[in-house]
Image (cartoon, rainbow, N blue to C red; front, top):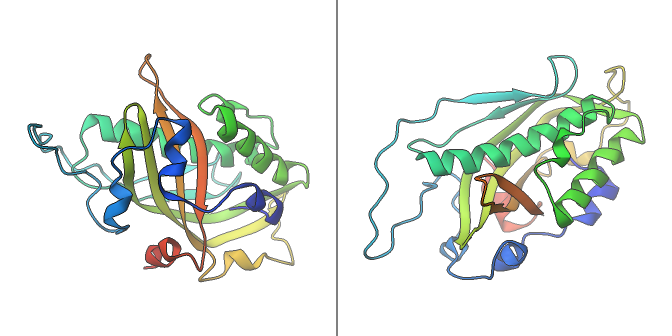
Length: 226
């Protein structure tokens, strides 16, 4: 996903620090350890009611502006999501797809800037332009799976997912694969943990305020391998 310059902008995941821009750090599910294939729903606190069972969400995919315009993102949705979790995860995945759509449009599609603020917006713009300025794009398949909430306090939520980019290939703007493919597209570096802090706005929207990545050989990245 990331060119070398863009990756340097984003620090490795560091617990509650990620939520600092969304809300003050409080109880964190991250303390329980990261289990990619585990349940995404946190256990209810004493006195709280567990959410009613929901119909499992079907598998879904997202593409970056057409079959030949960019990579296909295959999303493995968790089962049993309630409406709140579904909206949260959709905001997280839609943001990721929108950035690839911006790259596929050669930077003309700016919709990816609408759901991000502060450091996240600066990071997203820099990452998109790391491709656009070099007239690069990508094609192939990115697998996004093990969606889960790592921490939640107030209006701030830390969401994470595993990304497998081993099926991705860098191309020029005409869709021709580059002769020299980066080593981060090869296992085990092609799989890593992608996470973001999101804030719930009064109008009901989820907006992204910060991104973080845990890359190989970080333990979280290793646990994403399957």
